[in-house]
Image (cartoon, rainbow over all chains, first blue to last red; front, side, top):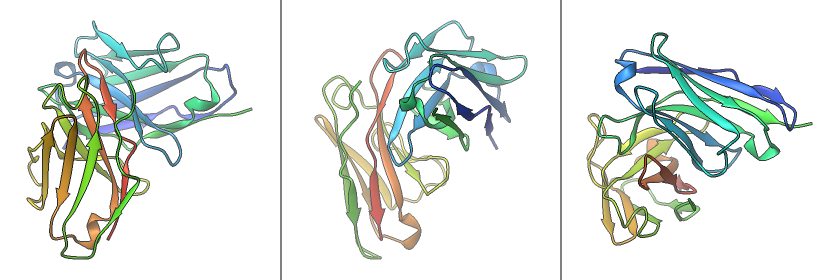
Length: 119
Length: 109
């Protein structure tokens, strides 16, 4: 069964940085696009970023463009999200999600890691 | 990248059917047959229930069905069961490897 395990969340001050990780297993990681999706407390889901399987193409929501960077290490089956210039409104649970082979939906999700931006 | 519009809440009795709507634009829901629906229980990860408007992943009950007309997609749950009580989110591919989600609908059974 596909497993996605996020880590790296925590409390950070506004303007600070944090790097999230997502360890993947039980599928050929490099063959699939991967994404980050977040959920602010009590709110809906928001797509954040997607990275192609080979790591050459990345895409971002306007709300994080220029501040967040998605990357991956296919030798370690791990996806990353580097978050800089964090704002209070970035407070959310961040989910790692595997994009389906036909790249039209997210077929597996991790349990999420909480990022709290507060002074 | 505006969120899709869903009703905040719906409710139904066991055995009944309910429908949740998801309204977008011609740039997302109306432009692609790539609407998916996710179920989320409190504190849990989202779970894929419907993809490509009306397809069910393996293991998902046929009580769950999806459809689309123009810029509005719908999720119908028939024969409501207590375990269906959860939040439901629609999602549409929006081109260029980007996606947009709905605000979510809380289903009370």
